[in-house]
Length: 449
Image 1 (spheres, rainbow, N blue to C red):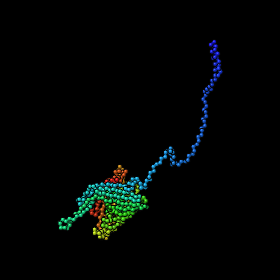
Image 2: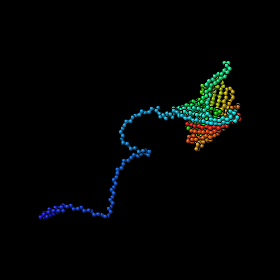
Image 3: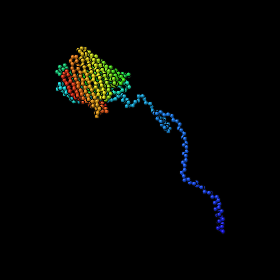
Image 4: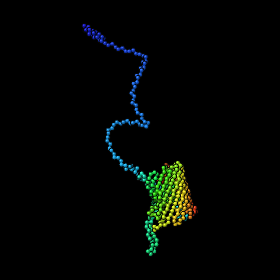
């Protein structure tokens, strides 16, 4: 009975489940062939960027704008005054300090001199120069060169009378001297530019009569100027001159007036004025008068020059009364050539002097030629040669002198040859009229700073 009841319950339930059961989904048949490639979708056109304006070839693209920063109010600095300048610039314009040292050693033998003077050797007077120059104003500059030499000068500071026999009458004088170092001013001038190539030079300097008188002492080819030059003019003088420089220094003209004695007018017993004029023509352009500077390699340069001096003076005696009058006329002509380290310079000089006492002309003629050839190697070296001649007092008692010099200049620092120079030179002097001669040698070192 129990089994009949259970069958009656299960059979209807199974029939109801089969009636409401969902049919299973059919799977598509598997295609074993390779499927055909699907066509690629057409690209979607991108929108064109707006046209950019043309950019110049040398323009740089503008930098990206930075993110805005908070705005801060900067402190306003006071505007600098026109007079405020960097201290370095003021120092450069106000003054520039330089200098040089020239120690030298020499030996000279004079066979016909007295025993005391036959042989002299040792150290020469060492020259030390200090140069101060500057341009505190745009159109005005100054130049000061003071030279201290190893030689000394005896200055008479006091004179006493000596009564040797006690009779109340002076029999002699006893001077008291003081030895002072040799200090002198080589150059102390002010130069004012007037425009259009003109300038005014006033002060103490060498009269521009010859080429060698215009060359600085540190730029001479030899340790000293030539013998003929020293016969005609020596040392600096005081005066005023007008200078004209043409473009590229193709022409330089100088006209001036000097005391003619090398002394201030207050202490001189000679009153007069020396009038000077000189012109230098450089057809190929700038050609400095500095001799040693022209020995450096460079293009062809030519220079022609002429100078003239006229000195009219009156001499006064110690009591202050006038004496003889003197007229002195001097002329000079020069030619210079420089190319590739070779430098040749020559001058001819003439002088005629007359005075009211003798009324007899004193005529002197002289000339010299010198050459140098600079060659840079491990050290720079330049062979030197110079010949000079002078005939003094040709109209009455002629005296002829010849000079022969030769040697070599050494430049240890090729990159800066002017810093240190050593000259080894032979000196030969022959006084033809007196039949005397002298031979010697000199070694000079020059250090420029």
